[in-house]
Amino acid sequence: MRIALSGMAAVLGLVVTAGTGLAAEDYYKGKRLTVLVNFAAGGPTDIEGRIFAKYLSKYVEGNSGVIVQNMDGAGGIVGVNYIGEIAPKDGTVLGFVTGAAFTYAIDPTPRRIDFSAFEFVAMQPGTSVYFMRADVKPGMKTATDIGKAEGIISGGLGADSPKDILLRLTLDMLGRKYNYVTGYKGSNGARMALQQGEINFYAESPPSYRGVIEPGMVAKGEVVPVFYDPEYDGRNFSTSSQVKGLDILPFQELYRKIHGKLPEGKLWEAYKTVLTLHGAMQRQIILPPKAPQAAIDALRAAILKVNTDPAHAEDSMKTFGFVPNWIASADVNDRVRNNLTLKPEMKQFIIDYVKRELK
Image (cartoon, rainbow, N blue to C red; front, side, top):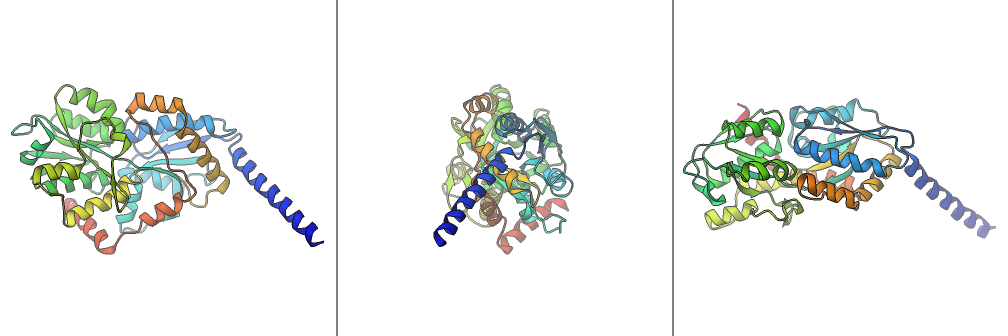
């Protein structure tokens, strides 16, 4: 009798497992999936998000179509709040978001939705490439010329956005005096300001840099690439595949060329902290808190197939010069949530650093 019961339990276990797999595979059958991008159309997040959505639709089993919706504002927080507070909780609206982890980690303002409560389906490390107008005095011919540049005007999207903080931290570490102009609506607005000479120092993520800046302003000699942010996981630096083939140094190596040593001190620790939050998980695929596990499983399976799709690789290379590689393992939730916890003293240092620009 015991043998019979154990055998029945094993069979039931197989049925449950099979049923779970089928539920995940069939979860989106007949449903329309919306990919919500938390920045404006035409920016780097949008460019990459649309390529992602195009190929995701091939691998979400039974799905009746994928549409892309942009919802920008407040450095990407408007879109994230919508996903957490208003969007359907059934997995039919997923967020393709940038910058959200950093903002929630340092923002002391209480929120209705705790960011750590979201379901993190996948994440992708990222970087930014920094460049300066060639006509900055006394003249930018090579990257190291930033060490003697005068009249720097750094542009940005918001004083508390990770991109803006990294822009200011790098200039402060290099010991350069600069003016700071922020509030541009997306990278398109900042890029236009750079072209018109309103600002002369800015950074773009690789989709925009490779697709717009390099073949345009760099090729014409209007701007000079200066450095890029290395990937940093809290312990080690690495070179992002997104900058492969670009003749540009990571920030710490440019700093070494100018100053003869690696950066150090509180600003450097803050820079590494922002990289851990913003660079190591720059893009994230999120679902609302308590989204169905079947939806999470179906999306992760589809994203892993996107990673290996040759057509996706070709389209990505043609559009923005690198192939995104999403981390979509079962431990993504834990990895993101662990990185959201900062040492109190560093959190306060970054908050105070931002406040100086908000006065």
